Amino acid sequence: MLLIVAPTLGITFYFVSNSLVAFIIYCCVFFFKTTHSVNLKGSEIISGLHLSPFGFLKIKKRMALNDIQELVIYKNEKKYSEIRAVSATDFLIIKTIANRIPAEEELKEIQAKIYSFKQNILNFN
Image (cartoon, rainbow, N blue to C red; front, side, top):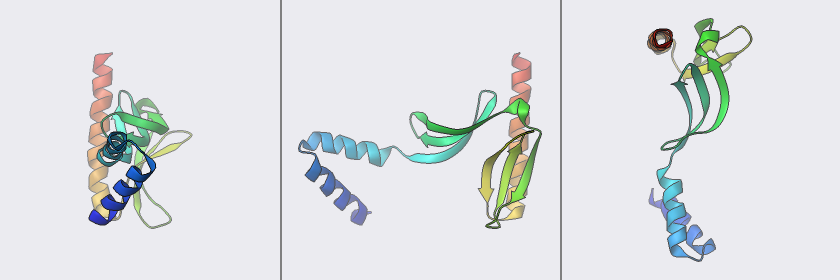
């Protein structure tokens, strides 16, 4: 950690003359985590880059829950099991897991979650 933090902080202070501004930039980069995420939001599944306190920065793919025909486990070229939501024209990778048995368990959980979201949407309308 020290090998990463010290040079980064030193370079930041070197290029930015005001140390308060450099410290704020460093804290923003260090504390806010940007990750690839797949979330259920409203009546759709969204895949994209997620910044932890603010939400999605970039949405790569969306799929409405009503468009989902099935949830399947697909083995990709690296032999990982992908849980995919498949529609008539497209698919969305929900999760990638190394082994098939944990992927099957995760698939059951995801199916239950999506089914409950669909029921909540139908009950709300």
